[in-house]
Length: 245
Image 1 (cartoon, rainbow, N blue to C red):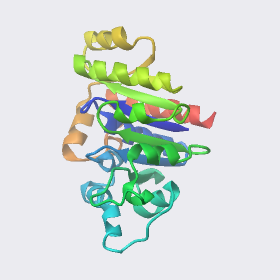
Image 2: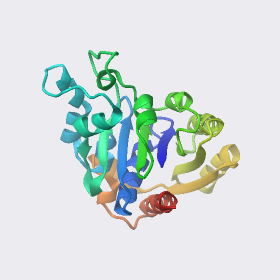
Image 3: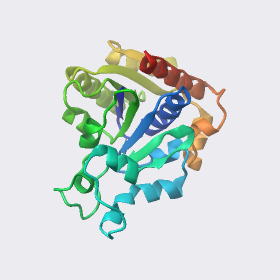
């Protein structure tokens, strides 16, 4: 199964991506997490820490120093330039590198190309996208199984989510809306009004998740019985059931 997580910057895509990836792996799925954001921070939400996250973001620069060999395909990129995160999630950063050779796959690979070429058969590939809908619009029809569209209750976040959902649907992907940081009934109603044609999962505002983000920690390594974490764990278990089926 191949999943991408889209939405406006600051909506909580990375928190959702990292938590769901680990829950899927805990459920027995083989999981590859692709950080496709221009500011790659998925490692933080997965629990590898800031130092390893920064190292991973620059891993392919070692090519220019002749420290590692070039890789001819997507699987080689994951193996050579990725790292193992908690619960056995394989993490790789998909952003371009400085001084790239566009004729070489591992030097010039784009996040959308890496996501396209990684096979989701028999495993779960989950991509944490850059803000907006750019990568969604560039994905091939039929290449993505599910798009998690993360939105807050602000008008700008909802509009980006609406366009992301429409683009995903036009490419044959299922859409599941994650209404994140919901603090009042009015918040959820605004999201339902714009995106009610899709299934919506509510994730309540949660101080424990906010604190983890501020401290650079994985929310899953903190309390799991808070409202937001219960909702995210339920989302991960739902996706695990779908992957198993």
